[in-house]
Structures are given as structure tokens and as C-alpha cells.
Length: 132
Image (cartoon, rainbow, N blue to C red; front, side, top):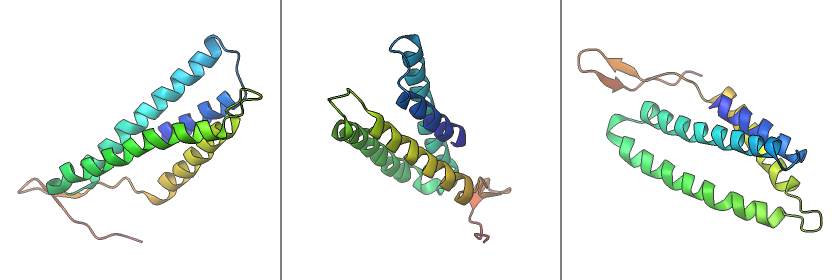
């Protein structure tokens, strides 16, 4: 997830520098799409590891619905911030950079990578106390 968020921020920032509309621009946007796809996979991997086994299906559905909103609102923001005079999406791309950096900081500082403890006899995840 950290790689995905950092890569998204970097590639979106590179796009604000307006690389030439040929191989460089295409490479940047393809790399951005790859980082965003890695992030999607990372989120669903977290769901499987962090939610209770009985609730994985429900949690996956909620996360997928939130992801659907994530695919709906960014194009609206990009369209609302588009500058037709200069044919420019800089504001929308900078908002993407800011969002990715905020998510990166939150993920790095607040979310722990701990796995639920497993009951060795039953092989089922056991709840753990949160450490502060």
C-alpha cells in the first residue's frame, strides 16, 4: 500500500509538469494506473487479513462499494477543476497528489501490519487487544 500511494503521488506530480504528449506522457499515466491497481489489490488483501473470518464477505462488499465511489468522484473532480483555456488538469492532479500523500502518511503512521493471532489448535483467528 505504501508503494502504491507513493507511486501514485509521484506519477500524478510528474503529470502536472506536462511531459510531452508522446511516450513520456503515456509511460507516466500507465505507471499511475499500475500503482492505482496495486493499491486496489492491497486494500482487498488487507480486508482478508484484518476482518473477522465470518465477516470477510460483508466487509469486502462494503469496501467494493467505497471503491465504486472512488471511481465515480475523481472524474467529476477532474472535470470540475479542468481549465479549458489552457487545456490543463493541474489542479485535479495536485488534489490527487495531496490525497495520496495524506493517505500515505495515515497508512504509515496509524495502521499497523499486525496479523490476527491464530489459535493453533483450531486454526482460527483470535481477537487481540489493541496496543497504544
